[in-house]
Image 1 (tube, rainbow, N blue to C red):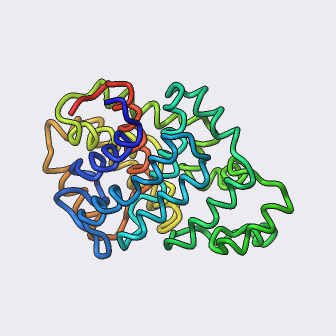
Image 2 (tube, rainbow, N blue to C red):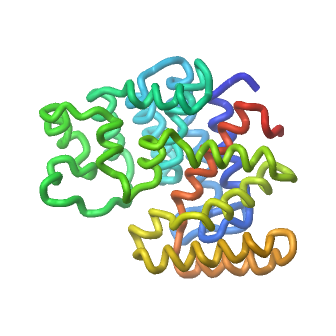
Length: 282
């Protein structure tokens, strides 16, 4: 399927269709404020922005348009995933490899950063309170922060560097999308239909590193315990040998409101890479 925008939309759909994904919306689970159908609508709404990236538009405006389209469906469903997918789609015009994606993000500009900030005016995104010294750059200020960006000459990659280590989506930008490409490799090696592979890879990613959205909302101790539980399930190959235990973990996290959303974002990015490389088929 030689259509990066279509593959990106499909990656978003396959990610939310995977089940069980502990703590996240999937085709069997809704959250109090987010439902499975919200994610389907968000993926479709983001398509115009993904098309812009596939056609060579700059990363910032393409991302802003994707978020505007997603938000027009009514909810913030895939902000982090789109922040990964837009540069990946842009890179796929040439060659979807880590060096090319690194070149794409290194080529971002102050104008891209301004578009990224404007995207926050379309949707409510959970972010940490910034240190006082960088308060003028608080993303929650939206377009009001653009003069500070321009005064400091910050590109979108610079903004991402400010967000590391507390945000693993930003970390992907700075580290060459290493976990996204790792997720793609695991998806290629996994068995079963793509949504089943997505659930398996999601659990493997969650088992390796505390989810930074969980850290922000619930603290490091909770995030570490979630990772330890996931690691135990992966070690026991529980999706194959004790699926009920994974289903129970998924229900427990949903009931507690513990949502490893960053891990879902990485899974979506991995699905896109795997689709582009024809490592998985529909």
